Length: 312
Image (cartoon, rainbow, N blue to C red; front, side, top):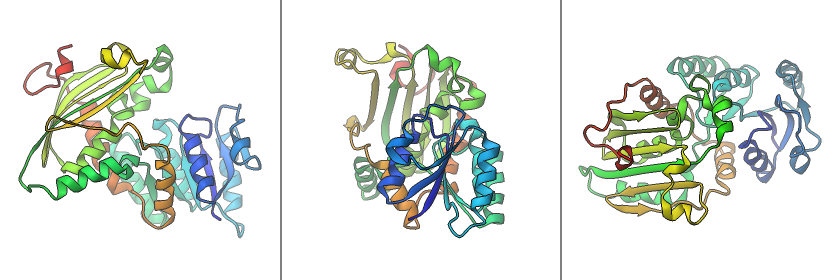
């Protein structure tokens, strides 16, 4: 049984990490968050220490690392802009880090974590769960076994409605979240590069607080992408079914259905990490660099090969 700690234990995604630790037969011995209503801990690890003050959490951590039952893994579910700091804290306290997406926001943070990994001998793992989705794995195998010189035409559309609260939280602050392409798009950008190869060219057609669109030329694909937080963008047929999220990826005009199959992907990710695998810094690097480039690129408008919803 491995000992875990969790940073950002009150966040939405943290419950999946708590469940993953439990379902892999391990335990959380300490958790921290600035939010103090933490009843969810009672369903998973009621005996875990809990800290509102991060400095007290780090003090507890440093003391635990001197014992014969140290904390071996620290799961990071904090806001995006704190990831780099919390990864460094985990590595410097002689623990492996397991971090939610995006791993970090800025290229220079990648370099700092590289140095920390080298000096501590520990690693950071990123949650890139789409790489474990059965449908995505099947698509990758199909492309891998297909024509080597083919360039596929792809449309990516992801709309996930958000209310007014979103723009007043850290998620609505581009300096803290990285903006819409980073906050909700990074998994898809990672998945597309994992399947179709590295980015050769990127064009941004639209970039606003609640929506963004662009074009990617990958090694083996031409991708028109559109991301939105605006409920008005949800297609009518989806709205009529009460849906507030719409996800679509078409390859050569054929829809890739992967709306299901997400329930245990965090647990599978933890199993991979605990067995000596997992996705590390080098796996995360390409999508971090791409999203950083996207948010710092001036949109060109509806010019060239753009996603149909840009006109809408």
